[in-house]
Length: 354
Image (spheres, one colour):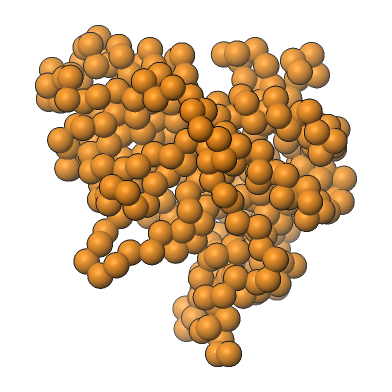
């Protein structure tokens, strides 16, 4: 088998999400807003418009808003409607995925379509996370390329009933991340590359990169070929002020498993991949523990079957998100824009809020 073939074949024994394993996780009318009931013009963009009130009430009550049947095709217009809920946005600095901008303050997903993306909470691996995010359906194929969201309140209750969940509660986590140097790959194929530290930290200055990483709560050291190695120790849970309780705020998405279907990286053994997730004491998770971690989110998955112009706003505490791999036929397109909401400083769990 050639190297190219190896880069397209997952290693044996990988754990692929099964996505939604239950029906009727939440009533669809509790989170879907039908744009056909509104004008979908500038009159709806006022902060006190009926649409704005409906979207914000739905978000406050459920943590999930899916605005459908909008008739919108332009990303800038979709962003305006997303900002009815996502009032403040953060700069994507220190993030793991190699995101480019599609429009001003609208990012691409930053992952290959063919790779499945495990359920995850956005930017859980640094001290500055985000409260919410929005996805914009720029190019869509109904019936193909769904996003999945998982009800994290139910997932939290379920995992805490397990020995593994109690272990997560007791030991916490360490996020290990290795970022390559863009200059070292100028004349080399991007084999084994996830993201360069220049792109993640938005600087070409190594000293500034370290400063930015440390400002995000990361421990930093340099490896060979100016490999930026970071570590972040934190609870597997996060205190959610609105509901006054701790919620699960971690997943296998920050482990080497993230790359099991990722071209250029999936052929590497786990210990050579750019991410790793261990317990806070440095001990490894077993395969059965990782399988359970995946299954917990799968139990409460909800499919979002995209239409062009759809706007999906997600509370990053109350929902995790991910998707299966997507394989397009000739002429097919699927593209989402991403808005990253306002940042908050992670505190981990509170001992009195279990």
